[in-house]
Length: 144
Length: 144
Length: 144
Length: 144
Image (tube, helix red, strand yellow):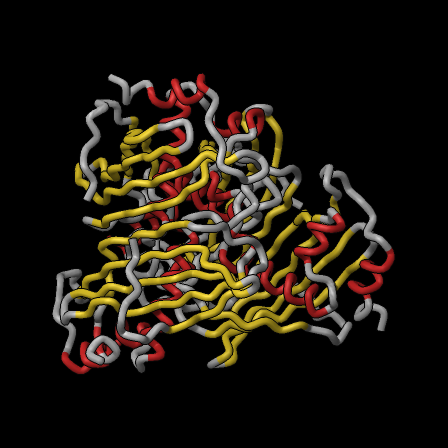
């Protein structure tokens, strides 16, 4: 389902599974992988020099989700260290796509793969174009 | 810890335990009881003729939590029908207190008791006084 | 993305958006739609005469998610009444697929569409075949 | 409400506020502070040489919550770095109490204070006594 992007830039974020994230099946509840994807893309954007919080507060730019998909390969378990590997796989001034691989650190194992698609909105919740300097920063790895 | 209020008015709301609300201990995760308390007080306020959504949107009034407490007596389990019984136990133009009893419906059993304390804030996040008509509506059961 | 199933059987469940489900964008956080899908499929299975809780506890059958997808069309907002319309779109003794439409009740508007794919696991977390009486019950609407 | 413990041992854990943890008031939803307390106590117990995951899995010991309390002093906001400072304030072979202070890192500010009380349960969900070596490890800082 998820093709590896060719950008060569995959940002990695680590987190530890919280007790709150498990369910009575003894594994992480499936919706929480989307929370981890959010953490992955926020940290990727931060690594590109654009804290998302600042984009919202000062530029009035909101990255609304239009589609999310996750394929579950193996369960994540309480207290595991998780690596979220995130790439920008599409970036236009109006839309972005991020692709994710979620792994356990020890043993190293792919747990899930997914992507999210987004559009940029302004403060009035209308679709908007990203200013050029933001777009350039977010697309830098795709242009290589 | 939680004294029964004497107002005689306890509003009851029912909900069913979601799989997402359980944890790997096989019971409801403890923070979710505070979510149920929120549902209880919103439905109580609605029953008093004041939809909280309208208070936020049109009057710019926010009921910020200043303290929350919960005593856990027996675990809630997946798929159980839960009754949240909520009372206003204090109400001034600046502050409110709600007291809760959380029960399973079948078998009828008290699972938790708690309270939350709140202050009213305005759109600028400053403490504010509730307009008289709102305060009167929220306090009606206490005056009996 | 999501083709309407031809089974003619769409089970509807209603819920009200919780404050806890919103985020600072002022709308429902995107992962919570997967929680609502879980509620939709549990209630569909219950309507077919098979409480999922009983399947887990007495038959040791677990419906593990292998893929989830959601397309977000319009934001859900605090306190809205939500209709989750769920269909079984595939059912074999080993695998199931559910398709969902999530709407606001007033105004009536489609907010999201999605599906989830699942496999049946036994208590040892191994793929398993559903006993014939369960499979028949879950597939009844597909056979029409 | 919360007296500082005299043990002199406060374990600090850091986390960053997730978008998923905010609500439409633009701050962290109040139930999520209890999730952060869970992280604080798990990391404290790990620092004492007792990974809680191992206690559950190999010793069949479960630390059930019997009471939780939180006083909210200032709101936590999206993307802030949060410090959870946790102390063991009571420890017997049957019961434990943890006290928490939750601060923002920059600016350094106390956001919330609270405590949780717990009892040890065995695999059959019956109250149990902690084996002496566990109790000694968990109480080491209290004995000073």
